[in-house]
Length: 321
Ligand code: ADP
Ligand code: MG
Image 1 (cartoon, protein in one colour):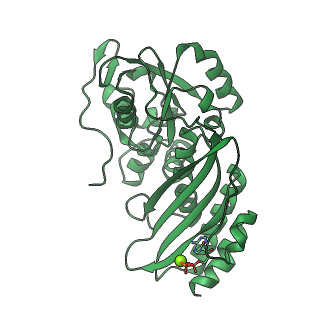
Image 2 (image 1 turned 180 degrees about the vertical axis):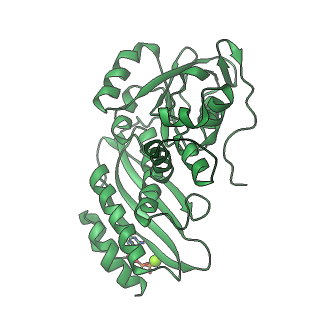
């Protein structure tokens, strides 16, 4: 199979939008949409860094796509299209590609997105997948990192640290979890659950937002810096799943570990206190957990405290270099 066979057999069926031209042209087109801004993001994941080379291909596909959908959700955008750049080891097998494409097809269905194009090449090195995703937001309403104001409340969607717990289990950290708890955590590492439905309502509610990929504390630190404010977090309020609490317990070290681990793909955001009721309603409508975890103050940086006592935060956040 050469790359043209791969494209025709596995990827052209995913390119349902007329602008994709069935993946037989040099480029695709998206007609402008009056009243909306196009929001664009890209993220790359590589074997041995972001997933295990032996992971099921369908989960690898979903992770590659979902980390991008999560960025769009955090900006208040509704995702619609994506481009797929594949750098494949020459040894890749056709059944791997078939299962990979099937994973994408399932997520296209689940999230309402479709493939616009991409590039396929062979490399001497670990498999790498770069996706660029496109979404729309009402004009001028993309939720930035920079809008937080002193007095705003700080919220986070979902639960924090599950993916890190799953990774710890894959790395053979000792545990006494029930099978269902173990599977829940490892699944969260392999397949994030981006908050696409809730994100689509964010632009009227949030003053600032950030996708959590490097860790809650690190990413809220980026938001605080962009907004020129300080963020005070209540450690006990940080939402953690029963499975994660069974894995690591409830000590401050466990909370800190969850809040600094990363790969959560949840949305952390700030909002004026007057929006509290609307936020609860939007969360219920999207069937999403949204938790109030702190507040914005004047100053800079992030404080994490538990029952009034400060928890020291070591240099946090995943860094590639
Ligand atoms: P070029 O020679 O300009 O790189 P290609 O032959 O790579 O063009 O691409 C031909 C068509 O196939 C284009 O529409 C491109 O977007 C699409 N395509 C190539 N690889 C992929 C992929 N991995 N996923 C989706 N579409 C792809
Ligand atoms: Mg190409």
